[in-house]
Image (cartoon, rainbow, N blue to C red; front, side, top):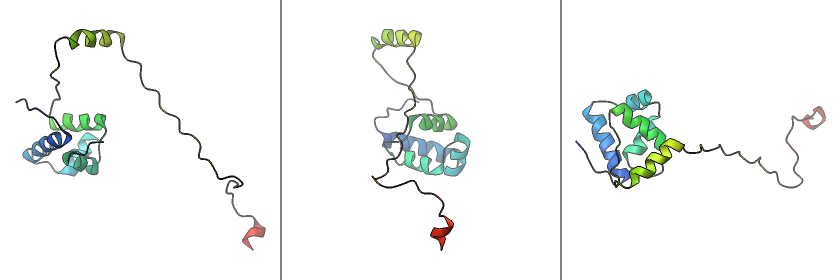
Length: 115
């Protein structure tokens, strides 16, 4: 059956209903999907900022297939992008932490300091 999902809350409710119907505990489905039980709880409660890749793992584990209903004219552009590919994201490098001026790196205390 196809169900329109228009919000994270609706998706969460569907995930929860499916899990309960399958008589699965939250921690069991989390473990088999490779996510944490807190993540499952957040998704089921409709948290809007969860990671999509992890949601997809959860959906797959529950046997829920995600589909999109798009206008026909999008298909030609999609076909081109599938052929040419999409440039992968490069991981962001974290900037080193800045110390306040005059502060020196912490080191083990010397014998004189310990006295």
